[in-house]
Picture 1 (tube, rainbow, N blue to C red):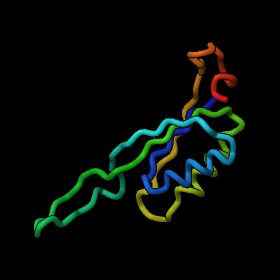
Picture 2 (picture 1 turned 60 degrees about the vertical axis):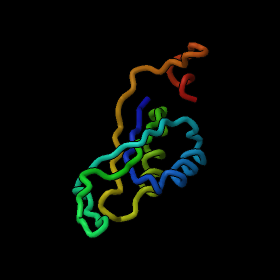
Picture 3 (picture 1 turned 90 degrees about the vertical axis):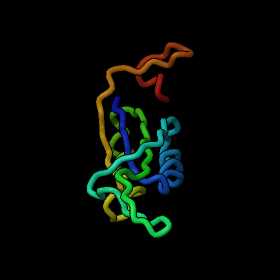
Length: 113
């Protein structure tokens, strides 16, 4: 099993969620986040005063999938989240040793489906 973490723009979330549902990925954790990378934040203007925002709003979406699903999930994420602009985000793939469903005690693949 692998955990696929995506940090991306909030405006692509609805489409990404729907596209992941369409390939059978129903469980995910979504966290509001803020960060900066190559974008280096943005500059704004408020009542004639310029200010710099060091971090930008992002979403972190986490899904745990069977090893055979990783490639398809990554492909869906890349196609959905790619706007061609700096700040589209990152994908991290992390090994998961075990998953246990608390309610039933199911382990492994049974716990994530």
